[in-house]
Every structure is written in C-alpha cells, then in structure tokens.
Image (cartoon, rainbow, N blue to C red; front, side, top):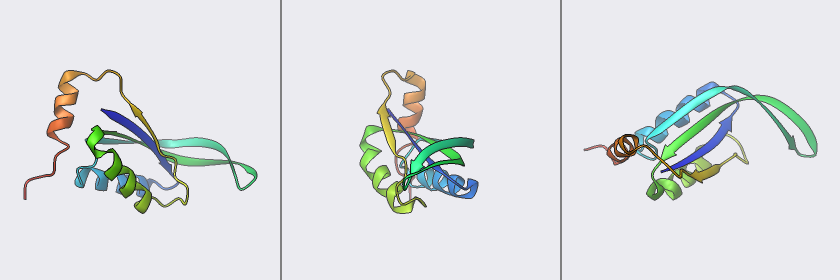
Length: 106
C-alpha cells in the first residue's frame, strides 16, 4: 500500500478531489484534514496560508493514474505530491483496500 499527500486552499476543492478519487477507483480512502497552517517560500517570499491536507491510501498499481489525474485536476500550478510506501499494513485493512480499489461494476 502507498500513502500520498497534497494540500489545497479551499475545503470545497479538498472534498471534490477526495470524492472524485474514490469514484474513479484511484484510491481506497482519502482523508481531508484542516485547516492546517502551511509555511513555505513561493516566488521568493515567505508565505503562510491555511490549507486542507488530503491523505490518499492506494495500491501501487494505481500510483501513476492517480498522480496523472491529480496533477490535471489540482487547482495549484505546483501541487505538493509526496508518495511513500507503507512498510506495514494490517491484513484486514489491506484486504479491504484491495476489495475497494477495483472499478465498480457497470
């Protein structure tokens, strides 16, 4: 299983991205947290803004499709996109993720 993060400025964008990622079977689960305070440098200036963090949980075979889709639909020009591989995942949770990551029946 893999876990990835991104942030957006608006709750509506966070909810839309989460909902669509699940509907498209790109992730088994997406959690929305926030607002969180993000401190960063942008175009030479130090910035601080409130953002909503999305945490995606997905199977490795979905990584490229999820990344491509996220970068097409994300409202930021340069979205945060950090992906890590989970070293341990509970077997029941992993089974649930596998069962819920396939395309829904037509």
